[in-house]
Length: 173
Image 1 (cartoon, rainbow, N blue to C red):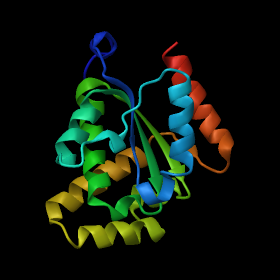
Image 2 (image 1 turned 180 degrees about the vertical axis):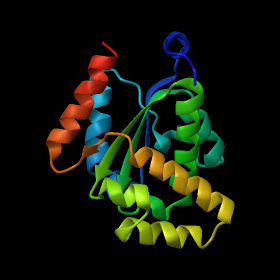
Image 3 (image 1 turned 90 degrees about the horizontal axis):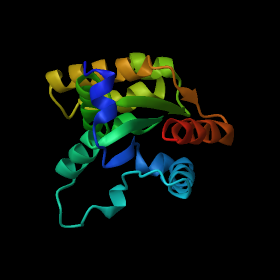
Image 4 (image 1 turned 90 degrees about the vertical axis):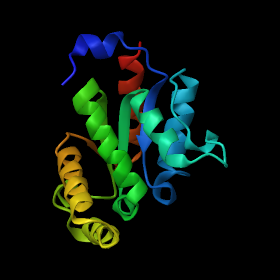
């Protein structure tokens, strides 16, 4: 793992990268988070700014690597997207290699369902894995277990959004 001094002296293009399933959170939680971060001068990667003719994957991987914090918004359909799961692999890699800060928000899912890939979350995960290799499934499962064990916030009301925003603002003050 990278030392904290090397990660703190690094220049980050973005302060925050969010990994999320768009239909679940883009127009609700994420839009409020983005608005408050912008208001407080905290740069956040915005996937809407990727040029429409550009391949998405390289731009997302680059943005993850250039972000100081990754916030993973785990929702009921997060595991239904191989894009989300591939982002998750890159985030975990950056956490281990560069000391990237990783925060989790459990948005309508139980952390245990994320760790064990059970419940509705697990059903989505299994469906996605049915279209992938066993090796990819193993890596995704390990990454979900890893982030499911990170102490995160359960989204039950907007107070969680407030706490998350304030933590990030304090971190960069």
